[in-house]
Length: 302
Picture (cartoon, rainbow, N blue to C red):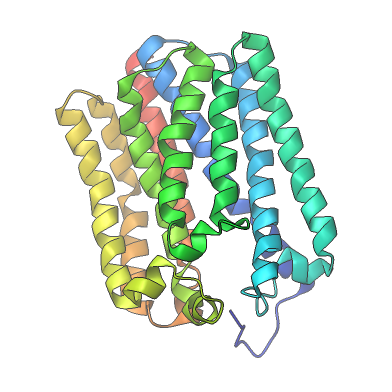
């Protein structure tokens, strides 16, 4: 997206935007909620495993973010994106090597968990997540260009990541992890969904059929509203079914952020410069709703 401001952003701000610090919450929240689910149901908590898992997840997200910039550079979709790491450095090969280095370190951490527990289950799940993550932007798949990114995001950062975190603590599975997995999958997918509103022109030019390109920004804003309402409605449903305790209603404290996100997009969906920050509101919603959900899952065991 071309910046229309008369004052170009500083190099420091461009680098900060390129590194995307807020986006690393998509690594922290699934592991935190999965671990909280394990503690809430089984009163089991291994801080060492959690620490290794969180570090590995952050490294893997670094790989995903950097490699996506590299793959987007190949298609030309980021030619107007000043905060692309490839555009900032002018060295695509270096960025690819850096991305793969982060991936190797992240997988090494998961290998350490497998070695400590003498169990490759968590490693298998995370490797599958990485494969799916590659198909999002990586050639020859580029499934994100077909509008399938949100679906990939839902499963990898939702049920699969929650299941891996839960298993890393308990060495077993439970059907009940599908409930928090579904919620975190939805809130993570909302972030990706919101990232498309401001770049419709660039997506169209590169042949990317994102959900917003397919739906249009107005219908997309309505889909966002329904999906956000669904997120909170599912908390009520899971509580009524006895899967969640009443304490998970703490998540409703994040409703002001949800309202801010939905109203902001509804008002500005067709104005790229104004709506471009909606993904950061979505990140805050994902982060705080995830933390509150984790707290609600932990309190019954405390």
